[in-house]
Image (cartoon, rainbow, N blue to C red; front, side, top):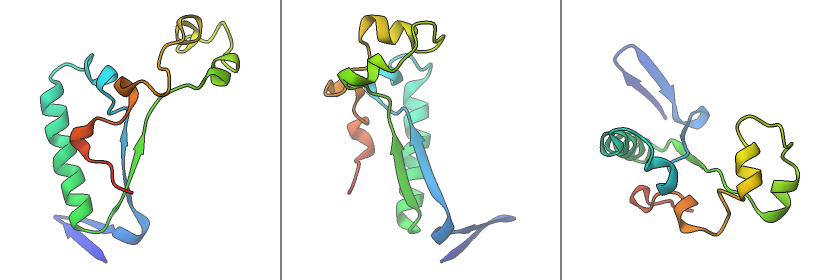
Length: 102
């Protein structure tokens, strides 16, 4: 299916909507979280209605992952040191309001 929106043409067979880091613990640090979630839900609803693949990406670590992070890594050094973003913690699942589907 090919869709046209103004001057934009989207081929649903070759397009995906990627929703990244929509996790409660991360969203808690986003200014105007509700507006961000509203826009994500609008995009998600549109994608699902038009057969566009939806991909959710989240950040979470299992114990062995921490060992692979260099101590000097600027973004994840503190994550490693404090064992943050642990997989299995519901705060790092995809926000349930987005209704992940198989």
